[in-house]
Length: 404
Image (tube, rainbow, N blue to C red; front, side, top):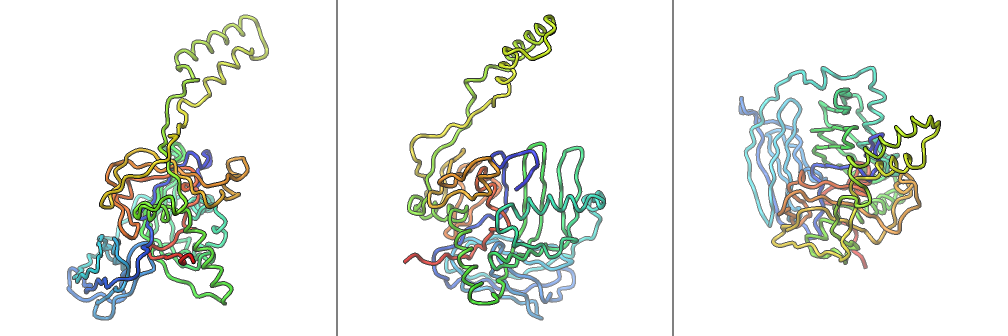
């Protein structure tokens, strides 16, 4: 995810449209319409029409018409994008539903944005290396991912806030040879703050299936997609919605950060350190005394420590709404930690993957296909903060093979 000075146990990962796939068969859902220029009324052909974070999409025809149909129930972010026009975006919920739309796209004003004015062209190579690591991730699949149009990316480092900011005029095109997808990513926000150890990435992805060179590659993509799915946020949200958390291999516990009772107050520690420093000076001591070292080490202890509930928690979900606010410790028990993650934390891989999920407001809505909103009200730490990256991202309509 990335910041030079933080471990993945302190990273906060915010990601727009973290979605899951539906486990139900495709229904008779349909959305159709016509796209025109808002000023002239002329039809707009070849506009990109798609559901964000899926491989479901088409282009409008010469008359500006489009049809998407026969997809699974659930909630989707419907998007229309065309160069030179403001994108259209609206969420729709489908339950054997049909919608007919007339969309009028407005011309996008061309103006020089701050990010381009302040772009650091001399440091572009270094900034791009940092961006690529944060965007694609450090997971093994990242080595098989290529950003095909990196020069469409504008980057600058804000010295005042120690923040790397990115903007792209065109959608970033990512080829993922590990999972067999090309992703067009409409970047809305990228900010990597070194001071707060916070990474924010917001955008609209649309997937296209790559064509496998042979049967062996096709089977490898199937295996990698299933591996990426199992234990992911997508897998978890789907399990929560269907009340099959334990069956899916997850264990959930309440998680707290409480004051460290072993660490005295700053005021008391500062007085002790000041006293022993002055004592060292009066005695012309060349080395730090054991007492002074003890109080300095005590002051370096964390102010808060992790506390985990002893009893496994069953999340209360009613009518698709999660009646919970706070932090959750989530264990995925069916798979060990990745070696790269454990190595980054200076230890051997643990027996299972552990993540922290922050739910900021009550009533998080989870739909049949695992879509949840508001995505801004959830962020992750620990394993998911490291693993949920572009190189392991799956489309909303991905379905794992049924277990025999």
